[in-house]
Length: 335
Image 1 (tube, rainbow, N blue to C red):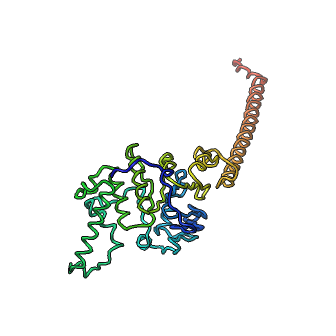
Image 2 (image 1 turned 120 degrees about the horizontal axis):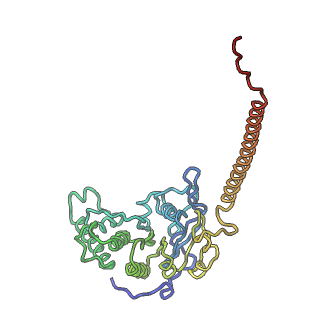
Image 3 (image 1 turned 45 degrees about the vertical axis):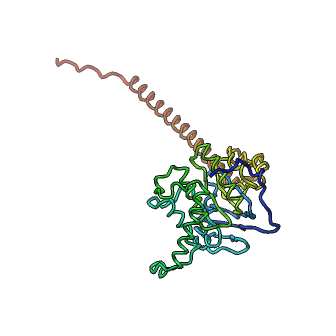
């Protein structure tokens, strides 16, 4: 696929007043005593590209899993076009949300075309009986799915690889194939989890152009990425997660110049940082432990010095006593 090199600023996203493709409200995810995501609110409007960034372990992929039904949020709701989503991933896909994964999850021993056809399963209505009989209705549906899959392969530049096994594709093309499979479900919202991870600069540029082309076709995009240049050149808005909480949200210019964002990435503490109170408690406990250990060492040294002095004094007294004792008289000879 060849598309002109553009940025988000060159192609402003269309807006629908008061509408939202995605509305995540108060999403919290706990695993036992660990809170991985805490009270996160996020909206994505039609035709918009929104970035989600944050340091490793910030909770970005966990948040994605909550949005797509892989996790059931402990608290909060996720709505798509005004309807609260069920907690089942296939029903979320059927509703209109598709995703890719941080680690590529293709069917390695299936062809490129077959992988894309898998993504059509929520848009076909032929059952087991129809598949066994293979009547006219089934054949029509099969042809339609294959035609749509080929359109997507041409769109992503993979049409000439349709009969190749997925495992034989280069890494960058495997990423494209994942996107094509996600698009096969005809989503209104596409979630991309680190789509440029491990890519070269040329592949990253091609991926940016592909995402912009997806937006031009009317699909909104929510993307997680660690490549800041990619995010800031692509997105209309960017939200930052730190320790499971949304720290800031705004345009790329606002976010990349925010002192709190800079501090979060560089590790410099700032007032009101999520987890600051807990970190202060840990530091206080460590300092108290260090002081106790130091005091214990001083006491041990003092006690050791006292014992050594007492032992030295005892040894000196013993030596003095031996020196003052008269020598034994020699045995006399018999007269």
